[in-house]
Amino acid sequence: MAESQEIRRNVWLSDAGGLRYHLRALQHRRRRWQVFRDTVAAWFAAWRPPCDRLVLVGPSAGHTLPLARMRGFSEIVALEPDPIARRWLAWRARRLPLRFDGIDVLSGDTPLSALQTVFPDAAVLFCNVLGQVAPAGGGHWHERLADALAGQHWASYHDVISTDVRPLAGAGPVSCDTRRLETVLERFWPGGRLALVDHETFRLAGPSQPADYALWPLGPGRWHLIEWVVHRPSGGIGRGADRSALKPPSGP
Ligand SMILES: C[S@@+](CC[C@H](N)C(=O)[O-])C[C@H]1O[C@@H](n2cnc3c(N)ncnc32)[C@H](O)[C@@H]1O
Image (cartoon, rainbow, N blue to C red; front, top):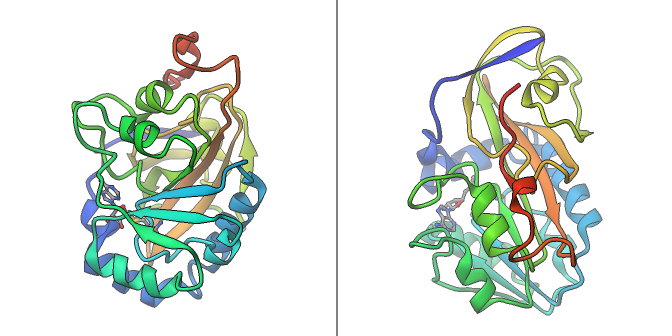
């Protein structure tokens, strides 16, 4: 059985954006990252939110995004602070109705709440960002999402853990409804202790929502376990609903 060992949290932000990340993407996007990119494309294709507008939070230059599958939206708004990424994404998405907005929905006293007020009718895709940026004021994204976006369609792919330990050969994408992170880790890594960075995003849409997992081989000797979750608003989940079901899962 794999045992998780929490070492530190969200420490590789410089790898997640800026020049260093773009250089990695140039090097690995078409080969090392291809299987992961195909997986993200399949996740996105299955999502199909009933919205005309899509908001991308942290798309970078779209290195892992299935841009060709976004043609059905009448407007796509990208929220991305990296100027190199914005220029590159604008070029890559030149056939899409893409525009940029300077609003920062991850900061402030009530992170994410601006998504509801500024883009109430839009679906929101968090593009591998919530495992790399902690909510201002502390806490977990689980509670923030449950508070701010209960009534909105959103999906996210994000780092759950990252590690230098080589995964099992052939460990492919899986769907899991387990509430134990260790059970997911066992599908990807051999038994024993696993030195890892916990990005504190496991079961981000709540423990009752199914989740998908895949490996992102960021670079030689570095692997990220990525989770994909979807939230669809329903009468049963909303402001004032029982939020206890939306707390982050606790350890074993
Ligand atoms: C790992 S990268 C995303 C990778 C991207 N999905 C791709 O396909 O290459 C994380 C991104 O989040 C962006 N980011 C950081 N803070 C942000 C914020 N407050 N709002 C929106 N994006 C942010 C970074 O600039 C970076 O481009």
